[in-house]
Length: 324
Image 1: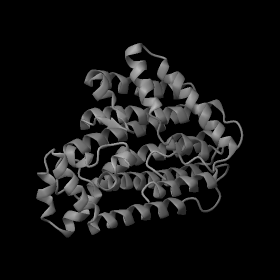
Image 2: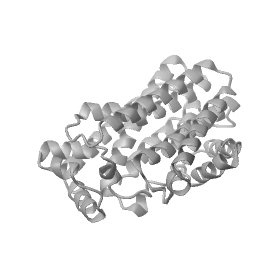
Image 3: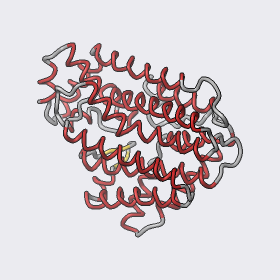
């Protein structure tokens, strides 16, 4: 499975229908704005994506048939938050490509990227507010706060080749895994799951999110642009120290200087990516990600109320397959 493939081939008809309804809701949410925001927002939506977060909402809600409006709103809200973070992240990172297309910042400018990201964030909460569930809004707000704190932590740690593994993992938990966990909790909550099942599914989502980001960081040094839709070595370019780098430096301290002073030249970055891709530290990072997948699968043992265990296992397997 490529980094841009949606893991929907083996989903139930009910889940596929729910994703189609969500896609229409997302289109309406993005179009509901002034042209300066709607046009680049629509381009961001058209770029596609795996829609893993909406899928997690629907799977945890157990949408075997038609989903409730509240569940659809939650699915759209988490994806709008995700889209907003991508637009803002690309601006902060100076990225020019996302999913094989020009980023909002590169095609419309920095000011437009700020406006589009802010608009998508606002639309996410407006969407979920329609579900009339204060607890659901609290869940999404907490995830949004974690995302912001994770982004701040990443900025503070730029080019810090002494970054400890625990700091990296905390950043990933906030910046990526928190929204996966929120998606699962929202789906279970709005689908009628018990408090205990909500807790376990949130832990499932967090573990899947941790694995997802570690694999993404591995792909940054091992994957081709044609597969990832991003320039290879993007993390090296913007100074984001990731787990493959941390493990490689632990094994080979001399790599710290090479990573810190790689510069922006494509040849030097490609050469360093090749070196990191072949390094045992990258395989160690892969094992760490697989451990999170095992942890996620363990949370699915036992009673899950109405949640679709099969679909959730597909998501966990898909996170691994995107790296294979």
